Image 1 (cartoon, rainbow, N blue to C red):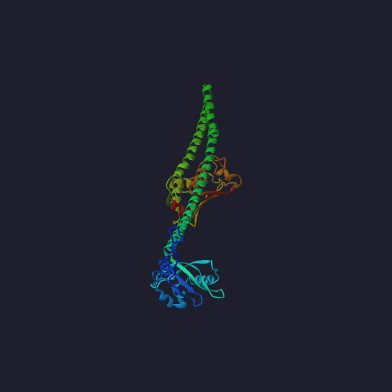
Image 2 (tube, helix red, strand yellow):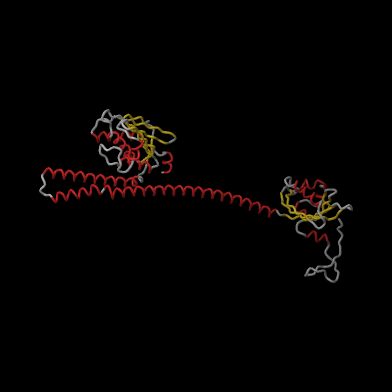
Amino acid sequence: MDTREHNIGELTADGLLSGEPQRAPSINRVIEMMPGFVYVFNHQTFSNEYMNRSIAAYLGYSSAQIQALGDQVLAHIVHPHDFPSVASNMERIAQLKDDESLTIEYRVIRKDGAIRWLRSVDTVFDRCPEGRVLRHIGSATDITVEKTNKDELAALNVELEAKVIARTAELAMFNAELEERITERTSQLEDAVVELEQLTFIATHDLKVPANNLSRLALMLQDHPDQPREERVELVRWINTSAAQLHSKIHGLVLVAQIRLSSALPAKMFNLRDEVMATIGSLQKAMGQNALPVIVDVAPQIEVFFARFELSSILSSILDNAVKYAAPDRPLSITIRATEVDGRVTLAIADNGTGIDEATDSGKVFGLFQRAHKAPAGNGISLYCAKRMLQHRGGSITLSGTRGQGAEFQINFPDKDIQHDSD
């Protein structure tokens, strides 16, 4: 390359040539002071013909060392991962027009082994007589800091995006849990409304009957103070019966109201067989019997997570129901069996009593103040309470049977592992 100095007009402050020609700075000095480094690449020898001294600061090589590499210069200094793109860029430079330029970013390996990023801008310097590009001139600047910042920013963006995705997933899970809780709470409120409607109906209808009877009977005693003794005794008996009915209804309403309060009782892990045997013993003592005809088939290792008061109440209600509705023409027989599958315990209590008609009696058995049998007398409360207690804990109870042959209650306890973990 011709590096001789050329005289050009001095640039004035406004960028115009001065009127009087003066000696301008040498082209070499201008090139040496340019940012980055300048080079001239020969497309016939595939080597660098010229580099300014700045190349030593960028690559660690002197101009002579770069020229000594000859046609291996690109293979020697360009990073292997970027060599294909640099080679492709060289082919595009060979197709450039005189007024065009190309820009490329690539990595180079310094003499000391350090890796730096460069941005090169290349344009045609001169051509062969037939018009092919003979040389191109380029200017390269170090953009390592810029690329590093971009890479760090990209990494931070990836990290931020991962955090956003994770947080979004957490929020989605939280929203799903919240929606589930809202649905559950809505169901509980709807259930409470239905129950309140039932209690209101009972309070406005069922309680009126015995209360009205008491009022009428009291008036009869007041209006006829000289009634015969037999009639007065009969009126007093009716008064007592009505008072007992009224007391029973009020007691039932209190029990139903207490169900929701009992759901706040702490649950614990109990041995099911021990609780069954304790309930049987309590019933035998209350009934004044030496032994109930009960076969207990409950493995000693089975446990349930429940409130002891509620568990005892449920078992007592079902066993009391079996005794109450024993068939008059055969000895009573009760069988209690328990199974456990995947943490869920099922307790089946079967009897050979008067039984039920599933098609017509199932709804009545668990209805508030409803009964499937007219005799013996009952309140229609205990089994309703048993069902509600189980539902509040996440369990359930069903009844099957045949009229005249017996019935079987099946208690499905809530998953004890889930219940215990959430406690």
